Image 1: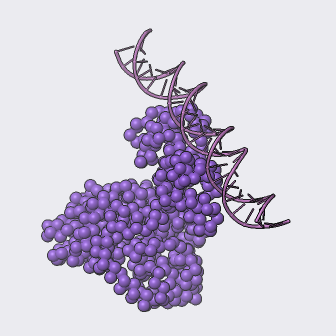
Image 2: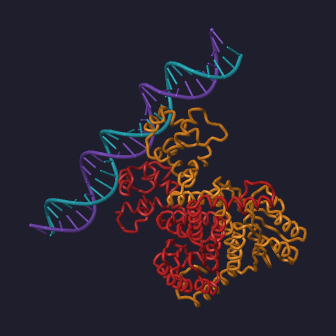
Image 3: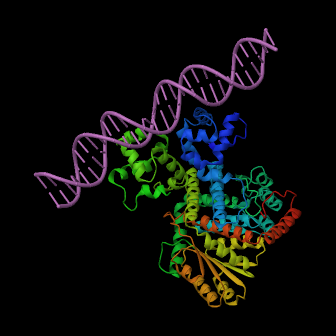
Length: 287
Length: 287
DNA sequence: TGTTTCGTGAAAATTAATTTCTCAGTGATG
DNA sequence: CATCACTGAGAAATTAATTTTCACGAAACA
């Protein structure tokens, strides 16, 4: 399945010739997907049979199959690994950001655990009150977004991005409260303290964070999100798309867990919006 | 390029046989990408030459090329158009949301105008003060995110999600201010009023919104974002990913427009964060 | 109703991919 | 140090697949 990993050959399984071909392929995927086996063989300086063998070695049934697999992974996977050339041309910046965002979503999809998502959704659905914590700009967006999505579904939720407040809220949490926190680094020690405090008091805690991090260790239920951020200091944030997707997924699962209640609340919000704006009810719920 | 549109044949250019094949292909892309021309011909009940002709008609050089193009578009484009079956299984909800998010990014990429992005970035870069407006949950996230991204680059920026405040801020805007607003519906008439007020006073205005909408008409420079939202009332928000990507792109262009200044500010922020946390400086800038 | 045009499938031809076979290089072993 | 086994490469041959050609039939139009 994961042709890309085979081609990069991190484990060093490929022979010298195969590595040579793999590198050649990675260098110019577009050429390869459009070429015949003999064209490729000539350009790479090998014989056609070697190409066939290479295709088999990387798990394809033949050259045609290899081309298809390659094309399939190209869109998301491969553009991404072009050497990180600092560019400032708008087209390239746009392409780079969009590709990385898609890649982040792609990576996320591979690592999501449906059972955990379900468990988290049921905790949230059953909560009398939800506390959402996250700070620092990116995580605060996620925590606010949880508030934005869940209140529409009839959840009582408060989002806090203030470390001092977080601690007080944690200490004051009442019976029936569920906490959900976001930390992209997983090293927000204030957040860890909040989680410990709440767990000690029997408040269920959910963390969206890196697995193996202090925050993950402190939370009752972790939804791990492990993505490699790029090195470019100006572009550190494709991870946000993955976090946002997790929020969306949780919100949907919460909605489906109690469909009638969610429908009713959404309808009320919509009516209110339509009344206070023009009558076009095909619009988004809340701009 | 856009094989998907050709296959759906909205314009009715394809002949009866081609339509039949197109439908057959769309029904089971995975089979087609893995099959030979004769297998496909047999299953679809046509002759191999018809398949070749079909491939030519949809803009490919032959059957192999068709398979490659098909595989290329599959990842993002094609899963999306499976009939919208309301499901509540975590795997399917996750896949649905992630696919739609990727699709939104894909659509965005096709419609972005680099020149406009560049123009917007230069306006923002040159501004003495930036006002970011957006309300309603989704657009407010975008406006806050602009604040979050741009302050790091040394921009003076304030994000407001309060319609009453927006109006006052607009009226009070000083020389050198640039406004950037977000409205997914494009029908936020309070926002339109703000834009008109500022344009009348010579304040440059940028809008992230639907083209052809009142907000787009009122803004000096519009970055159009036109995406079809799904019909499912619980999942109205894949558009946010596209808006977020535009924010990312703008932030990057602003950063590159004055690299030294941005670098310096980022470094100061990073130092401060590292000092107040553990010493791992490979972390994100601000969780 | 005849004629033209368009499109289809059968068969042939062509092109491309794969298998087989042989040979060269490498490393182990006597 | 020589030889033998082993691995892996390319040449040629084979096989498989695709494409072209051609003939026929249906539909449209005169």
